Length: 122
Image (cartoon, rainbow, N blue to C red):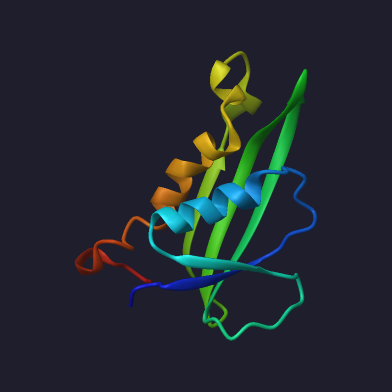
């Protein structure tokens, strides 16, 4: 089954200000409409996305961990994780934008979306 629309359950604990925008952009690039719903809001959409993101500090904040999960009717069907080892250490990659970090994560999460003959679990 192809995912056409998801409801993204807002996580008020996430302090990475541009994270939700990067996630929505990822869905958009894969042709999946998304809408953000409040943490306790009911939705008719069978696909609900939950997420968490953590930031670390080194002169300024940067995304160091993120997890995005898609559930259908309450059961997890896909998950992708971003993890910056050792919080990035001296690597300049830690300074990449949230979008640059999340694009490959969203591609991994939705890798079977545009290839229905390869789908597993969605």
